[in-house]
Amino acid sequence: MERRILAVEREGAGTRLDRWLAAAVPEQSRAKLQALIDAGHVLVDGAAARASHRLRGGERISIDIPPPAPETLEPEAIALTVVHEDDDVLVLDKPAGMVVHPGAGHARGTLAAAVLAHAPGVAGVGGPRRPGIVHRLDKDTSGLLVMAKSQAAYEALTAQLAARTVRRVYLSVVHGRMAAGEGVIDKPIGRDPRDRTRMAVRPEGRGRRAVTRWRVLERFPQFTVVEARLETGRTHQIRVHFASLGHPVAGDSAYGGRRRTVPVPVDGLALHAVALGFVHPVTHQRVEYFSKAPARLERLLSHLRHGREP
Image (cartoon, rainbow, N blue to C red):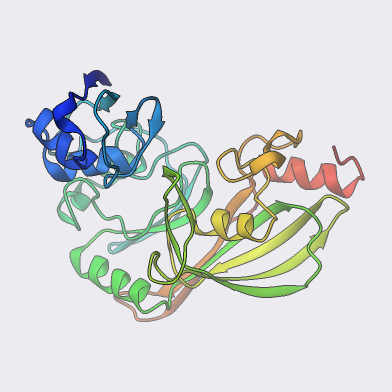
């Protein structure tokens, strides 16, 4: 990562941050600069700022520029947990800590690179940087996702996602004892205006509609085990939605607020994609796949069930 420190001259007063950067760093495209701002890689006097931020003159701007990503993805021989595979689809159980596709700061070790080594024919499916990728899981979320191995499968699966007919169910442990037994969270999600690296519930018109259905599986004095089903698939949706209710996901350092300091016996985010269902793009049969809770979640659940809450 290359860090540049730039000083805003008095002549820059009143100029939008994005426009000033476009002139100051002309070798970077406007789209790339916008992405860097959104990802929190541009700081004005040490603080993240929006692209529309008006400069006063005299500020110190730091910009972290990742090395250019290769135009084509290189295969990497990384072990995969294959749940199902045929000529058209590949269902995987992703471990926590693995990024699905390359991005800023994550050029190697991605699921996409591992899939390319496992099934080289997927290289021409979808796009060159995201071969076969139909949907994603956050880096720290584990569990099921489906990849397309043919262009026809890719188009059929993405159409199902758009129509909200793909069943995606998650198991999570959240902070606090939830009173209701079930519910629907229907709140728009967009970039957090105070921190562009995060998402947040936003007012109508300033975010994309996001819907999460949930039900309680178990309750404990300080935690609740929930099943969450996505109707939409926004970035960090489950994490943002439960945090908005005052019940952030256990182990979530980004959205846990003050509760993130509570000692929780879980190694990472307590969120796992346990079920995935869709219509097979070739057989046209409804298929369902399931994944057991990983060891990190089982340890937490055992801890809670035996009354050893922190």
